[in-house]
Image (cartoon, rainbow, N blue to C red; front, side, top):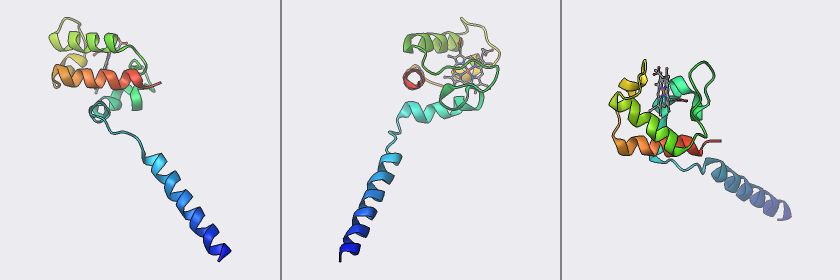
Length: 101
Ligand code: HEC
């Protein structure tokens, strides 16, 4: 009986631990950010020459993305890429990358 109780407690703890690991809130910003990972790295941490965009201010990111979209800021790829999103979507994306350490 004692063994059964211990086993049950262990299993309950495992379930609790498991759900904690899975408890990542899937926000709209997180989903939209996936398309950026190919170049800027997962969570905006770039592994190469393309700039890292994690942890920058929301204001900086929103401004950069709006400027790419409008053509005000010249770019090789970002102009075309930013055109694919609404302004609201770009704000969600900026919020997400800004929140990444
Ligand atoms: C195909 C590769 C590629 C993809 C995909 C891409 N980027 Fe970029 N990004 C670049 C490059 C290259 C630059 C440098 C500017 C340029 O030449 O376009 C850049 C620059 C930026 C900058 C300016 C950074 C700074 O420090 O000035 C921001 C912000 C940015 N990208 C955000 C994003 C976001 C958000 C996404 C996803 C919606 C994204 N990028 C997707 C290649 C990419």
